[in-house]
Image (cartoon, rainbow, N blue to C red):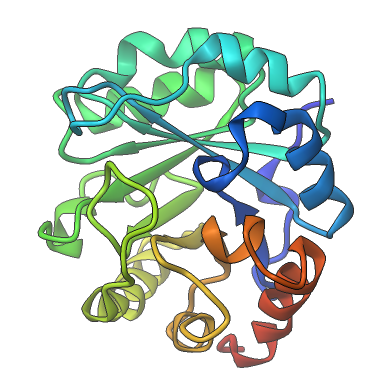
Amino acid sequence: MMKDLRTFSKNNILVSPSVLAADFAALGEELTKVEQGGAELIHLDVMDGHFVPNLTIGPALIASLRKKSNLLFDVHLMITDPLKKIDAFAKAGADHITFHIESDDDPVETVNAIHAAGLTAGITLKPGTPASALKPVIHLVDMVLIMTVEPGFGGQSFMADQVAKAPEIRKMLAEAGSSAHIEADGGVNSENAVILAEAGVNILVAGTSVFRHPQGAKFAIDGLHDEAKYLPR
């Protein structure tokens, strides 16, 4: 059954483990592990080898994973032409699609197409892009994703200077009368989750720090959930 991001409270920390850090030889088991560990979403990075230099998964794999998990599928399109791919990912089982403001397609048209497909829509930006670039579309989206690494590769170090975008984006959302979630992705772990939560981020994408935690995924997810006490009220 399709999950709706808009039904999740912004007063809680939501955890979206990134499949990019999972064991690709056992993805079904990996999804079960994080679902049983308390994750609310699963983050699926789609890279086209053009917008970013790496290549990852496509609709066929997402359709296979959809049979293995009841988590909200949080699909992040790091691709040049997201508008052309929305229907394919919607049919594959995506619940939510986030795309880049730097992509070639018109952002308002892309958000409208995602909503027309019955999904929630997110917008994101590369670290070098100012938050102000989101103004033309921020009033329409259900999530804003802040990249705390350069998009395209897993396992990078957290870029602390990107946290400052969160309060700026929160202000923009408030001015637009929006109740959109704010997500952060890149090098997120229990150490920097506190500063992200304090800045107003309530969805944490965590790859290596969840799937490869020495004490297991549930321990890692529980620790990230605990940071909800730092969210602005």
